[in-house]
Image 1 (cartoon, rainbow over the protein chains, first blue to last red):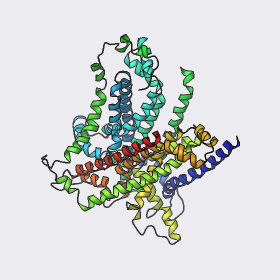
Image 2: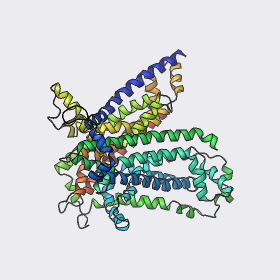
Image 3: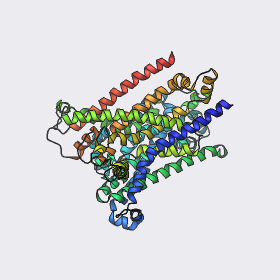
Image 4: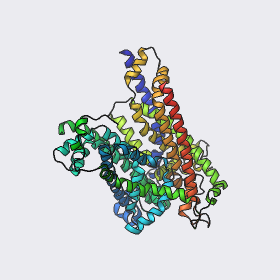
Length: 272
Length: 302
């Protein structure tokens, strides 16, 4: 098929042209950060800024807010993913099994944050968080409650795609008829079958939480981005380096997770 | 509803309600989800909607809405709307191009994986990182600025980077394109090579294929994605906050200002009125989307 071969060649050159051009647009600011953080005072290049950033002891002493922000963001990431999964996976499975009539409602509620801008939610959340602080204390960790709402639409779509791909009802009935309780059904039957969807839902949540600034900043809580922004007022080079490091780390994390998901999927027939 | 396999088994009375639960009991399973979303999503929304019509002493008033007529708030609304619309279109066009280019690569290949992961990060990592990145590139001390200076072009002389229709368009497009790729790639992946071959075997050119086959199929998801991009830019706060140190040219910054600073007596709830205004604009855009989608469905059906 020479026609197909010609098209494939043409598609390949089109692909590289587009990826190259848009890639350049994306690479320039990233390169700008690298260039900025390696400037030496008199002109020329130095790795001093990066040496400072990697000297954890000194960083901890001179810029304690960065470590606090990093710890807070790590905790927020875990808590957000856990709440999101513990709430959504059983609810969505349950709706498919027992309450198909409620599916529209759950979908509507989950997609609602797409139409309500985050800044609007912040305005409304301020009184709610006054209560959260009253009952649970002022810890930054409780921001996770709001973050779950922000990731709801993305997580719902990912999980919905996963649950649609398997026959939830038959699987659950089969497990039940073999004497499994609901926790076993969830943990050992449904969850392993929607592993890829769970991973991609978590994947989006991790990226969102690590990059979140708005809510934390307006509620005067700590997280990574707030810390980096504060650092920017004191030492611009170190702040830019920290921002770039966070971006690269998040990218590596997401890239690695994309392999985990794919490998598990290809291995699944062997496991079962 | 998707047809499920062994329907008979699933709907057998003995297996339908193993614990003898009634539908009312089944509804209890929905309770945690409803309680959570009520507390952290519906209640905040109601606080905004109701609060927009209350004064500082919780008495009903229309004063907050009339306060929206202040020139700086009106111009912030216009800036935000135009900025979001322009970057939604730019992001959608370039993002769709990128999505199509990536979709022609091998599935599970390195390029596709690299681009999706990168876009996943860049779409969410707006804010501070982006402000720093553009500051280091075209800011006062940015390398492009310094480089252009050698050729007599002075970027540092003006505040173009902080202006809504210049710098912000550039910076916003930077996070709109990755988001477009993420939401639009699945739609482009749904295009089957067979359709192209069918079009070609009937003598259709590439233009015919895009005009009569791929275009109409992708149109609803394209418009839907563009709407998502609009609300994404419309509600973006972090990037502008980290970039702009003086003034609040866009509406999220105006709202943020009412939350973080002392407010004038009698204007306690103007922030809520502005928030309600944002919801109203999103609602208008959504309506346009629904109308457009109905059109395209009709067009596809005929």
